[in-house]
Structure formats: structure tokens, C-alpha cells
Image (cartoon, rainbow, N blue to C red; front, side, top):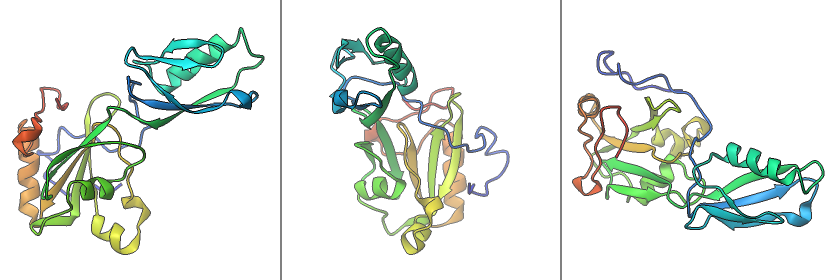
Length: 219
């Protein structure tokens, strides 16, 4: 992974980047697909989670899904199906998250909160915010993500390299609550961004109402 060269004292609160599976509890509005390996007649490609957090499953009826990770929900329904199906092998897939969002700020045309409606990479989110304006740097796009333990990680995305050479390492898929910040063209502006981030003053458009709390999480 590529990390931006920043002063160590300014980076103290960022932990090394790791690629983790998304840990995003299911919520009302999410849409799932279920694959039954030994009972394909039960397969369903679109199962929405209702406002009450429940989802209607073949042979089981309404089952609570909200508040559980995909893995937890998968294990739960396999257990429920064990009394009905022989060797229940069920895979739960997420088609879309109903309330998953990412935040795009900095040198873009319209600083925005973007709804994730399926797989979305950094370039797509920046384009959804109107693209990078003249004062922005395509080479120093900052991605901040919180690790499963809540600690913030930071890495650089070089969109110029991705656009010019289709470099796969800059084709980063986003996860819910990721923050993208397009820095200005000069290096000093990034150090200022780090200072402001660590001082709990994200330089986003005020209409986004984004702040960081004491633990560095977004609210």
C-alpha cells in the first residue's frame, strides 16, 4: 500500500493500512441475495430487509437480519434451516446497502455524501462529486477508513496513474463510511489537512455537518 510521506508526529493517530472485509451490520433497506448450494430452487436474487429489520426467507418466513454482519446472519439461518433441510449450505450476498455512504470533500466541484449502490471505487465517487477542480491534485487523493477496532487508517490514491495506466492498485473499492479528500496541488496543503484532521476539524463543506469525535470517528 502507498502511504503519503507526512511528518511522524502528525501521523501518530493513524495506524498502518490493512485490507479487511467490510464490517458493516445489516440494516433496513439493504438488499440481499441467497444461494442454496444443494437446494437451488430456493435461490433468490433480491431480498430486501424491511423497515422492521426482518427479511422473509423461503420455508422460514420473517427472520431478523438487522444488526448482524453477513457472516453472523449466514450462520444464524444455516442453524435455522438445519431442522428443515438436509445439510443446509446457504451463502448470503449483499446486492446493495440501503444506507451505506461515503464522504467526498476537498478540491472537488461539489463536496458530497455519496450513497453506495453497489461496488464503487474512489474514481467513481470523485466523479459523482463533480470531479476534481483545477486546484486539486489527482495524484494525492486521500482515503481515510476506520479499521475494525475503530482506529483510522490513511492511504493515498493516485487517480492520475489509474486513469493513465489502469493501475489496479489504485482501483480501490470503497466501504461504508470511507472518507475521500482531494488535496490541493501543493504538498503543504496536505500537511495542513492532516493537522486539521487530527485537531478534529475536518475541512469539509459545512453543509455536510461532518465532525470527528474524541475517538476519531465520523458523526
